Length: 327
Image 1 (cartoon, helix red, strand yellow):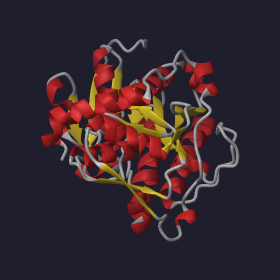
Image 2: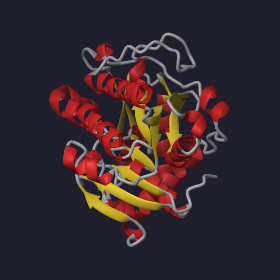
Image 3: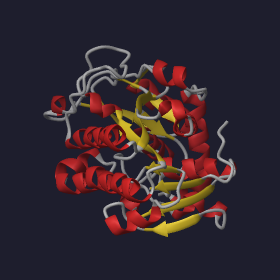
């Protein structure tokens, strides 16, 4: 799929969902992988995610907010996946300065380090569908207006512009993604702020209520982790994607209630509970969303292949076997 044999790869945030899945795939493809992570559990870091591959990668503990650390670790890397992030939307509201330090300043540190010490590297940046804000037309393509509604989305959008600027002005190659709603094995399961499907799976396996707002008719686009990282790796290793921005999702429209009912069916537990939309929700609710993924499918040899049913089934099976490491 990708020419990664003996390539040197750095994965920031490599102990989390997307980072560990990317690291595992790159190792399987013969790459020389270094994981850099600050081991913050609230952001998804979990040593168990890579435990079975111990000895097949290098783990370095550090933080992208530390410029000296980043300056050293980027040296000699061929591809850099910058998945280190503050991922909780609610926390970004409570502590916007922290969110800025991680989701903006951290990325400037990485870009500046590459400019100084490794200008030949190519980087992958995972943005968010939330960068679009209120949705005006479905499906959403990359030319849709960007009007982010939350602090988290503003910072995601800002970081994307940093990558674009460093490519334009300094030739630091990157590819940016606006990711929909990822889910799958190895996600943090302690709160709903990381992956809504994973959180619902935990609630169902614990036979608790699964809460949905209103009638649950809002539409979302969910992408299984293996499809997501296949798209990211294939894109970052393709020179045609230098400086490009792509939607990365399933491209399928799924009502929220249908997703929740599927989780309950497959997990064999849990109960659907409808509650009113919270006060002022409209300030942050984007409306229905599913991505137009024509652009990335045209640019590279990739398309999602995992149905929501199969993805949820694989995820449920994983946590049934490994729940003690995530609960």
